Image 1 (cartoon, rainbow, N blue to C red):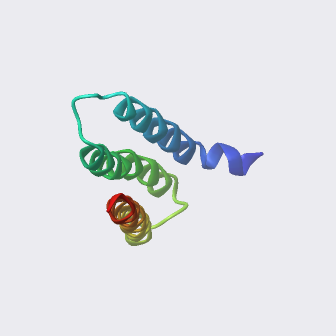
Image 2 (image 1 turned 120 degrees about the horizontal axis):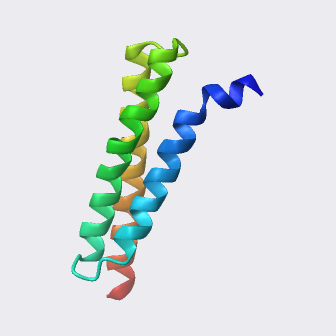
Length: 92
């Protein structure tokens, strides 16, 4: 149970990112590419404080937290780029 209280910052970050992504899906003025780019950007914005809270609690050091944020952001970006490229190739 104590582990869950330590990881609540990650849960808040994930919920915030999911809510932001859902709001972006309803933004009719943005293109699909813009929505995906903003979704990746919002991941970074939500995960920096989430991992920062773990650093403040002493569960992670700063280098590891930065590494996790960078790796997950790059992975999410690659997933989005692959999704965009697949979508454009199936239209032809």
